[in-house]
Every structure is written in C-alpha cells, then in structure tokens.
Length: 202
Image (cartoon, rainbow, N blue to C red):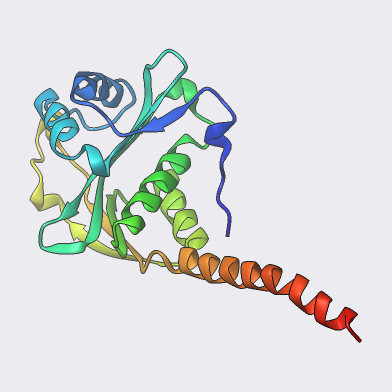
C-alpha cells in the first residue's frame, strides 16, 4: 500500500536532527503545549538518538515539527516514540502523520517490528494518529495502562495525567507484501515478450 508522499509537494523537508537543533526543539515543544522538559534533554537527544528521530523543516530551515524516540534497550525489536510536536502554524498539513511514516519506514528498514508510545486518556488526536498509522501498516494497535498518577509528581504545575501504552505491530508486513507484488509484476513483465515470441511462432 502506498503512503502519503505529500512531504515532497510543499516546502517541508524531513531529515534527522543535528545537535544544534536541540534548543529549537525544546522551544517548539514549550510553545506548542507539550511537557516542558529540560533543554539538555533535547540537545542530548539530537546527539545520541538522531538516527531514530526526525525534524520537519520549512524552506528557511526552521524546525516546524519533530518526532523523537529510541530503540528500547530491553526490547531491541521495539521503537519507543517519546514525543511528537507540530508547530501550530503548520496544523492541518498532516505533518505529524508524515513524520510518523518517515520513522516507520526507517525502523522497519532496521528490522524493528514494533512501535510503542504513551498517550493520555483524553488525547483523542494522538490516539487517532496511532490508530490510522497502525491500520495503514496492516498492524494491530494494543492499548494497555502503563504510567499511573502515582508514578508522577501531583503538586502544582507538575501534576500529570496517567498515560496508556500503545504497542503497534508487527510492522513491515505491508512492505514485504509490496515487495513480493513488485517482484511478481517484474517477473510477469520480463516473461511477456518471451511468451509473445513463442505464441507468434505458431
């Protein structure tokens, strides 16, 4: 199944982050309603986990969105997506989905079979995003409770909602099916002149 390639039709370019992006990703997260983590965390992420992250840049090179995640040390077949951010000025352009597809392609190329993320119970947009990603990859999204309220500080600005885990997989099935289909089509195309020549001899 072909996926949306609209990232090639506008001024947004998807690419791994570089360390200088760290402070910009921190500001993007802060300005668009995500948890305000340490700036150090974003700089470190851009240094150590660039290969499993993506930044969406506009024509001027300004980050307009990002996905950051890593391969779980205790589950080397699983990618954990930590954070998705999209600039409010770029909403409505399916940017989150395009970045998620970019990550999905990269991790399946590396042989990973599952993607995980956590989402608060009231975040309908993120739940719909992961559901559509799973559906288009021919995979099953499984939701289970993971982080409860007692796992987080619950005072002042640090109060945090619980988060459910979504586990999506196995990934790569559609890519494998597409490859088999393409191989069959190529074989049929290569065989067509030979069959035509043989039938013409009669």
